[in-house]
Amino acid sequence: MKLELIATSTFGLEAVVKREIESLGYKIIKSEDAKITYMGDERAIVKSNLWLRCADRVLVKMAEFEALEFEDLFQTIKGIAWEEWIPVDGNFKVNCSSVKSKLFSMRSCQSVSEKAIIERLKETYGVEHFEKSGAEYVIKVTLLKDRVTVTLDTTGVGLHKRGYRQNAVTAPIKETLAAAMVQLSFWREGRLLVDPCCGSGTIPIEAAMIEKNIAPGLNRHFAAEKWDIIPEDLWKEERKKAFSEIIHDKDIRIRAYDINPAAIEASKENAADAGVDDCITFERMNVAEMEASETSGVIITNPPYGERIGEKEEIKKIYNKFKNFLKQNPTWSLFMITPDKTIEKQVFGKLADRRRKLYNGNIEVCYYQFHGAKPKTIK
Image 1 (cartoon, helix red, strand yellow):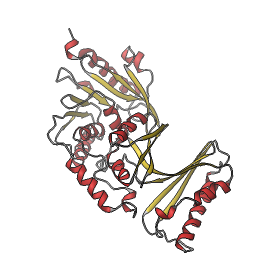
Image 2 (tube, one colour):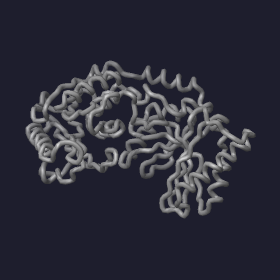
Image 3 (cartoon, helix red, strand yellow):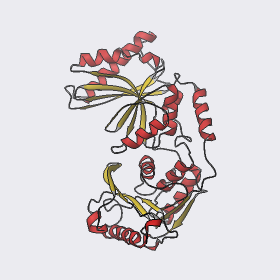
């Protein structure tokens, strides 16, 4: 079955998600703010959920149309072949949003959309009441400037929930953002990666999973696994293939530090659950104590923010440590996110080589990239 799929993402990560989809072999139709539309099939649903590291969800695009009246909304949604997806016992739910549209009442849009689906399924199955005791089907009806997009969520719990982070500390970074930070950096196999503010260990763990080629969704389940339209054997086949593609003999060297001993213990447990504890060294350490153990390396980190934890003066000390570290070790690179928009001139005294606006949860941050020189260019 040919399907139009949508991978949603955090603002700023669209290009990363697009590359991931293309690496799976699927054709991109268009890239918009926070979503990538591409062509696939039932297998694409399985592979996308298993392998996309930086996307939030994988949706099936059911319809797209203009609606200026509620009758337009009702009739078009009723015309969708819901019975091909939702069985008589399907637990279907409808969520709506409306922005800059004539049909602005989200409650009314939700009610009309749900009624249209119920009427369609009533006619198909010949029943008046639905028990909704089966698999879950979450339908999203989005109105933007009178344009309606109807989607079916195949993911369930967001893709950032890998399943390994059973132990979290204050202000954790999303796994999807951590994976993007690694993919946007210069770090590769054979180079040392250091996260001096590792927290729950998310950045080091995601980095190790990338290099070991561990599918991020390998140890969790998805909403579409319970759907009749996708054979159970297909999920088993793709999971088995993903297990076989894990690389066990790479030269992966990652060191993760945190001043909080509880964070280090949590990180160790999370890394073990993710299957990457063999290539990450966790150690309790103050950022001020960090020294370069090799001539070059990469720092990728999410330091604490003054708005959430710690005091601003303490945060500034961390930034100053990074500045001095880079001066003393010019072949090292720093990749860091922070909501502080003043650090380039006020702390580092220079502009970053690259910067990218991202979001860590609801907090707008900047991904600053300070590139080190190649060792052979240093005199």
